[in-house]
Length: 465
Image (cartoon, rainbow, N blue to C red; front, side, top):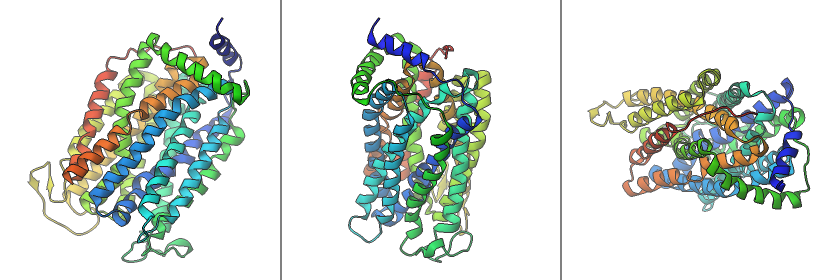
């Protein structure tokens, strides 16, 4: 018996029984705890702030944000598999979540200092965004690896969906707090609710936009506590010094073993492709509206609420549906919706819709027809993204070997990130070359189509948990 086989038996013997309700609740709350980083920082508040207040132009801002997101994706691709393998060997996952969450929180607090009209503001914002994204995504790797030990196999779809739904609900709440209480219009000095920003935040200095960073850190620190207190974790299996060597050896064996896991390997490659498009789509959603339609924080925030509401509905519907019909049909349907919606989005501009139909200018909230269509299409994208992510995570949990779950979720993160720099960098490069945001976004359609075509070849069979 090899040392890896022995470790497999040890891991199986230490597998936790399904967690109680408090333990499951704690795991679900992780998605809610981490959500403001992706919602407020990446997509709907701080990202558009970088484009409108720190960059020289919207096109330059979209390009630089894409390069930063791409650098983060490349770093995650390099770190996820070895760290996941080391965690498999060592045992517990919560210490890793705590450390990576702390790094994310420090980066979030630092965003406050990315001020306009200072020479280092743009550089600081991009560096903190990249490092914080690496930490947030890596924490998710270890949180995901806990899934199969918490509930029976036939409830994985619901568990994953409830996690995503909790994240989307947190997104709605945090966006409402941000645009209703913190972020004031530079023109009026008041929030969307007509209130002066809390804590005397100066709207002209964009302090509300920057305050979402510290708010994200505080939100995470509070909502991650149920996971740390109630959710069961694996016991320590070996000292960290020994786990590093064992984990790296297991990783090499795991990569070699993929040759005998054709469905898992094919799925990981398909996920690599379509997740790349999804990551870039999220990174540029609010930025796109800011640059193409000239949206203020009010429009971007309301757009974000719409996406999170439809995403919540999609995740809640997709989870039980995945348990009944399987993950593959849910994922393929979601990719089809994303492809058609993305194609329609790039056909819109402030002056035209469907590329050639002219529209009359109008003043007011979402006043033009292209803006209204963008809202509808964004809602469809949110509804498709929820079940796509939840079903992908649940499918991976079913395909993962029981003794190598964290390592396999590290490979899952690798498949979602190893080329994730390609999507943002492709958007950034095309945008920089054409100085057209629509041209940059159009390249994402290829990722959805190619990922779906490869997923069609995956034969899904249940694996004993």
